[in-house]
Length: 252
Image 1 (spheres, rainbow, N blue to C red):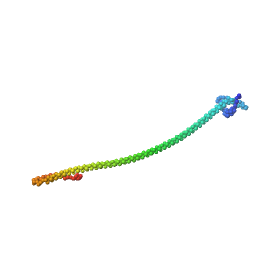
Image 2: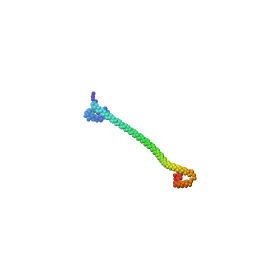
Image 3: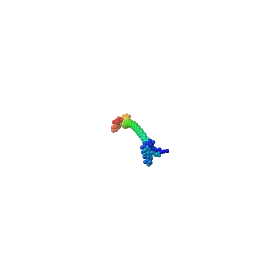
Image 4: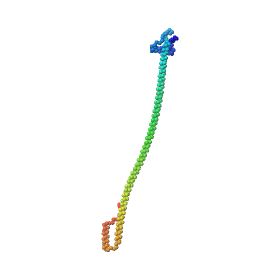
């Protein structure tokens, strides 16, 4: 079996690439690997480089490796692009989620603020109501205290008046007792004087009766009686009988 030789142009056409690209690839690999590829051959009166089957296989392997690399590179680029797209999408989603979270947090914060404001307003209203109620209770207590103080003051005044009245009554009773005692003393004194008057009257009657009982006496007897009577008169003039005193004279 004869070896099929191909020119660079023929191999490039077979592989579907340009002759220039293939030439550059062969030159690059020859320098890199220090190889000698291609033989000159005169075709149609022109000297042309031809490639053996082995060289064609080697070049194809280079191109396949390059294609794999390109594919890998393309895949890597695609992966990177996909990763970048995914990352961008993730970032956008994260950003959207963050924005949504922020909006939710803002809404929650606003709701909390509104609730706090409502609670604060409610607390203020309750405090105001409690304060008003306390003021009303204090006012009622103050009014009640004033009323109690007024009643106490009135009662104290009444007690003072009663005490003064009792003092006056006690003074009047004391004076009345003194008057009664004085009256009783005057009555006792009057009774004593009445007894004295009665005794004197009885003595006077007895003496008068004794005089009437006597008959006509002798001159000597008359003279003696006259002397006796004169002596009695003299004695009576020296000791006058005290007239009874009326009880009303002691009031003077």
